[in-house]
Image 1: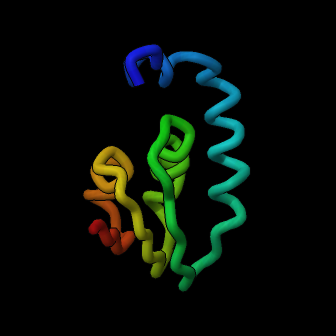
Image 2: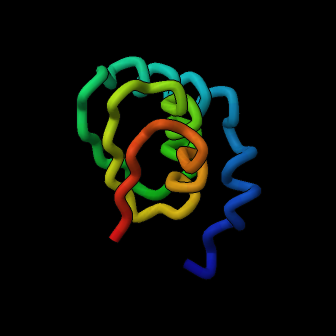
Length: 79
């Protein structure tokens, strides 16, 4: 992990592509679903796209994903 750039730098790299991927992935999620979201900058962006989702349950080990969904009506489950 020592060679990996800091999170903020990875978040800025290809930011527009990550937003497009996140929007596309979020559009595949329907109401009343349960999904798992992994750790990462693109998945954090996806979580931001899901804040208006209805009756969604998200399972994640990412605190950043959980925080992105904290003030929404999405139910978030972390280990």
